[in-house]
Image (cartoon, rainbow, N blue to C red):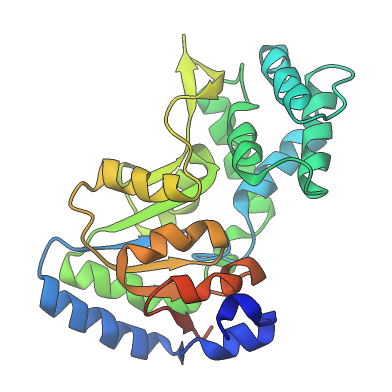
Length: 270
């Protein structure tokens, strides 16, 4: 019987559970085989930290009724495409799409992209200020997973680059990983287009979801020599498969359901 046919607890039990030290030994061995230039790749939300900063940001956006007229037409098209009631203005439609997503009537890939471009009409500095407030209010610094810090320290000590590939808006991921010393050019995330200094109601780069995560990583790291990859969701599976050492971090039931499709997957004991 494969992991896809097991319940969540049984599927987790079927994956080797290893400590940070055990996983570092695996990474060190892979580094010895591959050599300099190989990298580590991380999902962000639920992996590098507990919770989801993309959701935190979008919920603050809705709570503040922050949607602007520039987003309304695109939000309405999105709602109509998925049979979501599109009454009212930008705020009402964004709220309806969020509710449809929560009810699993609006697909994740489209919802995560929308949560980035729904800030249409905002200047980047305005969004940065909101991001900083949300991260502070949500105590982001205290949500970073301690079990991963020695792995990031190892990467720094070896000069191994660290990449982050996330389906959350780029603005929030860039600022959320700053304290971990990860440079903006090593981040791939949902990125809205910018026109005349303001965000536009569409993505300016391909979506970073599912196979799109691997494609995004390859655009910024063409060698795609991945020592280890870390993720928590089923849509991280493609990213995990690129790595010599694929690591599940607090995995979702959907990731556990496809665990047998990721050769060599191990579970980080957090």
